[in-house]
Length: 612
Image 1 (cartoon, rainbow, N blue to C red):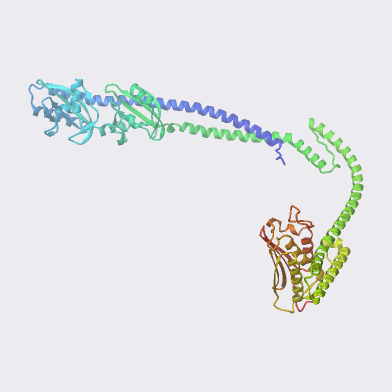
Image 2: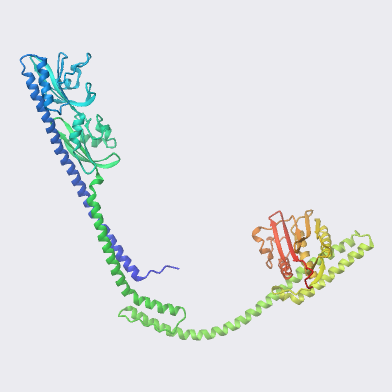
């Protein structure tokens, strides 16, 4: 059944969807514009900060360069090459400007004069030191790449200027510890967690808050950045890039320190500049919630005004569909629904007249049909039960009679006593046929309702011997092996049964065991005491029954053999079950397909206090 959705729900849903789509579209467009604007502003802020701090660092280095130039001029003006005077000038400058780690002069004759009196080792070569080589080569003020100060065992960069003292060429240099430069750029911020990196003319990091980056190239640090981006950073004086750095998408703003060909690089996570967007999202969410509330209320009111007359019409039509033709259909509106309700009411009146006429004719037809159906069912059931039960119940005793006659004809029985015994058995079976026929003719219709039993008390031992004897003759005459077992502890035990009907059940079970087993196979017969019951068991090694057919075999006309190669009418177990249950007993089946079947029934023992 399809799920019904009310009109007011549809209207509210449509309005809500339109509102949500519109709000999402406007919000998305606004957020995209805001994101683009924020990113642009954040990048421009970083670039402006990089340029500003590049100027600050350049000024800081220029101040120290000016100091070094002044010291160089004092030494160059000496009238004679006096090491002590040179050391005093260097010492004075070192004390006056503490930002210098050390100040010293190296000459072409491998002489080194240090402000603090440090004496280099014997193998020390002035001409191979980075500050000396760079200054001599450039013949102007230079900044050296980072190197290890052999005196202080610390990373430094040097400011160096070539000089000459009384025709002795040399270079004056001042070491600036990397920690000093880190202090200068450590105060530079970009975003909340961004920081600055100082890079020399070779692309190596001079200073960074992260000590692991010192002396490494920017290509190594920014290993997730494309080659084109790295080329732009190295080539351009300043710019803005978006890169993946330290596992995050980050802004990278850089500016060149022109005088020294260094670069300052600022990096900060892009997400830190999205706080305006987060605030805008909150505002959008509040506005969206208000809009949705207004839309829902509007849709509910509008939908209710439209759906109320339709619901009244549906209710009237539902009553009509369930046969209530007496209630008038009247919807008071000023639209097409009122016209529809008027026409439906006319249809109701006409249907009411038609149904009254049909109801009368239907009652007459139902009465006649019921009588005819009942008569046909009774006739069919009586005829079928009579033919089926008669043919099936006569078959087993006739088979036994034929077996006895066959034994007499073949001359197997030589003793007169045995012949008389066989004739008595034939007479007994003939009487049994007569009784069965009489019983079926008297009660064929009552098979489906209740069986009339002619119960008599029988001693179990005597009755069991009779059953085993008949079973032995029947089984052996059918070329099967008989195996009997009788286990009754007390000879005085009796059962109250209809002898003829129990014989009928017994013979049916023996016949089925023979019918559904192969010649020369064993059929085991057992009659045992099972607490307060006597249990009768027939076990064969035949074709067996599938487990899902256990219950079906007791149904009328049901046969296990589907190909009809084994004759039968499917009544034996049905009749047997009815007889056993009429004796207040139970019948059981246990089978393994293609290996054999065991069918048993049990009948309650007559206790001494029972009335028979």
